Image 1 (cartoon, rainbow, N blue to C red):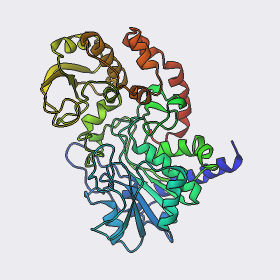
Image 2 (image 1 turned 135 degrees about the vertical axis):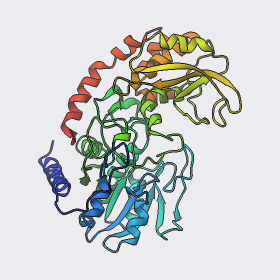
Image 3 (image 1 turned 30 degrees about the horizontal axis):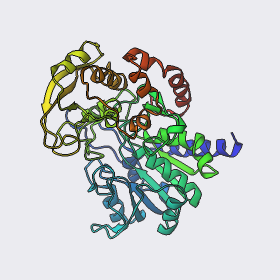
Image 4 (image 1 turned 90 degrees about the horizontal axis):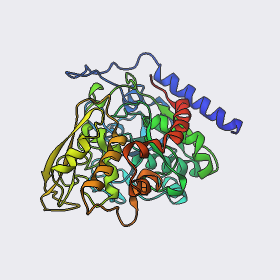
Amino acid sequence: MALSRRTLLTVTGAMTGALAGSPGTASAAPPPSGGRRVRTGFDRLSADGYALLSGQKAGVVTNPTGITQHVEHLVDVMHADKSVRLTAVFGPEHGFRGTAQAGGSEGKSTDPATGLPVYDTYQKSGRALADIFTESGVDTVVFDIQDVGARFYTYIWTLYDCMVAAAMAGKRFVVLDRPNPVTGRDASGPVLDKKYASFVGREPIAQAHGMTVAELALLFNERFVPAAAGKAVRLDTVLMKGWRRADFFDATGLPWVPPSPNMPTPDTALVYSGTCLFEGTNLSEGRGTTRPFELLGAEGIDRKWAEAVNAERLPGVRFREAYFAPTFSKFQGKTIGGVQLHVHDRAAFDPVRTGIALLVTAKKVWKQFAWRPDNGIDRLAGSDKVRTMIDAGAGTDEVVGAWQAELAKFRALRAGYLRYH
């Protein structure tokens, strides 16, 4: 690794630490009943008078989750504050204001509330995205989006793509941290094989990475961005105050805003890194219901699936025979059978192992089970191993065992970028 990159990250860490530890910032609001108040990166940046953005024209990559503790959107707050110069907004998948469904965006527009130009970043990367940053005229690109902790949730790759593009365009990059809602506990699941890289996984990280977006940004900038952009980006991260790695979202005292239309609650996020694998099959993953990714099923499935997966004795979760009629997506308008996950011990629950067990048992009890024709399961799982092993009759333990060596290497790499205890 070049000395210049080491120096860059050391300086970045020092600047972040100085901001994180600065005295005299505004006190946090009282925590709501049942939880303490975590101060997000944005809360801390604004309390410090936006000193980190002083003299800069700033543009923000955000979506509806970019809110303050008083549920005001940060774009509205920054636009009204004369101590910061906000000149542009960049919208990801689903859009800046969140009006688009999966696989959609809001396009280029003018925000009616602030009059700011909104640029569409969805499905843009590399030089095309760098040109958007150049066109916007910003000096600094700020990122603030709530993640859910899964490799295939696309906002972390929006982060990565924006970091690469900012480096190409010579822009500074600031990441405002938010909690990983399913804790920052140890990583789990298979690590992406680069041959299967896509927008649901650009670089080799674990399926459930157990990191915050600021921690991921530090890892990306040292390990992956230089290869894609020719150099690292000038990076600052603003850490949270009061967040602990063992915290689930309800311990933070922060308001939850769905980061995408099918991520309605933190309960959804808890199971998502395992059950999203069903997007790679012909079964419904619960889209079009009030419990996406917690309800799974298809026509012709009955109680036998719940019985089979309960027999696996997976830690922290039980499965209920369930019937539902999706209002859109797979099996729209049809009553189908399947299971609902009921997590009773979050600390013991392993979402990725659970997702594998559900795939293994679904294939055994439902003769119509099939992978999506484009083998999308391989992009979600990060290789063809899950698909080929299950097709060959492997059980849950065998499939999970196949990725332990690569996972151990990622855990060792990840340890160097963790910033919370």
